[in-house]
Image 1 (cartoon, rainbow over the protein chains, first blue to last red):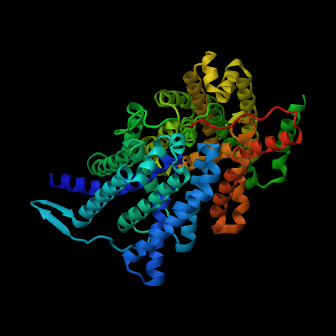
Image 2 (cartoon, helix red, strand yellow; image 1 turned 180 degrees about the horizontal axis):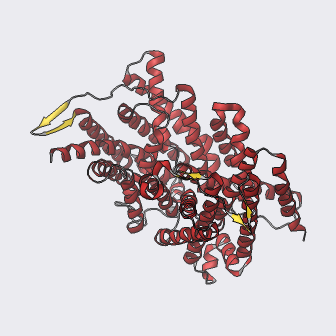
Image 3 (tube, rainbow over the protein chains, first blue to last red; image 1 turned 45 degrees about the horizontal axis):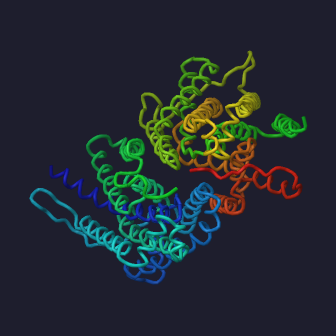
Length: 292
Length: 320
């Protein structure tokens, strides 16, 4: 039982980090129909930006995180949209899908060229230590991650549903044409979602890299899981991405421990296929959320 | 008759080409033929039915393993080949039937998960697939008593089958069934109003495309003579998708051109050593930004601009 609770908590914590990447993924899809196959590499890159800032300027981790927020916003937010998405999106979804796949390879190989193929240690972002409750022990880091992610989700939800800008962004997601008629600056709102995505992947990088270490190919697994989480939760719901991420994290941990270590990666995939077959709109999604 | 001129010329070059090449060059040519088959299958799904499949490498793998395991155990290649195709066709039906209930990008997601699952099964089920040790000593077939042990012999065999397959698919697309397809791609609403069962046609296209992937796999196994799960991962599916799109999805010749380009580009970029994947990715992005309808799309546009009288090229927007 104690082991079960431990696995549950650490699964939730990893899942929460995946959820951040999944939420960004969902946001990009909702507002601009971009299926970003480079999302995993988007989480990988900020880790190396932070490492560089620490090494080159001797910054403490949190200052380095600030630097990475800025650089990510510039490269993964603004640059990505301007250079890749804008020129391509009018040709339909497919060319952009191929282009983001290529972008993922580009980022991966670029990082490998500069930093090498070795996994680099990454400083802990949150306090370490273990809390014991009776026979159950959970790490402070896991609890911290969960609290931080929940705070971020609440803040993001608040921003999207309470502020004028946030509501305008939602309007763009639901119906860009009507939004335009109502005088909303659609391109600007889309740019905002790319910036929010850049911030989300930066935070995800800060939280997950101490666990996985900084390695050029980290994005492969993170990207696939974020993608599954987004679809399982409901492709048109931010809350859905959160639930999807948490669920995948827990399933991954529990199935690896209790069912089959060799097929550990298979369970999220089976969940993905089951959800698509039986509840294609996702666990929390509504069928006609978005016009086609 | 003039429209057969170019394909015949290309075929003549393909027949003459290996005589000037070393065995690695001939191996690459054979590999091209195999990938072109698989890409041709995917083109049916993507270019004609407008569905993104990210599992073509899985079908290539299933076909390769079916053919490898049967021929290693003494079954004739010529029996294993159709079986590989049939198994993949059946799996395609089973996978596509539920996934195509919901339109748009869902087949892409289901197939993505399916490819990753197939990879895991190939890696983990050692009793059947040999796991990471793979299957070795896959025999090469003989045709009418002619052995294909030599690289050039097997190349001609693959090329011959590629030609047969091209004719079969060409005939398929020219049949009433195939024409319903073109209608489907150009204007799905109108096609449906004319009595075309969109779902059935799309499903069949996906299943046939998958079956063709299995046939390609059946050739892949004896070509490399040793198979393990690595060449059938998601990366290969993406490469196959790239072949179709780069060549020009929905153009019959697209996969041939795309397969050649996607395979040769890394070879040409080898001079840049560690930079080559980087350059490759960059080239793909530039290509997608400048001509999203692929090289043949670009060619068609250029030709149309030169002579305004020709009808416009087909609309290539893929519904996802």
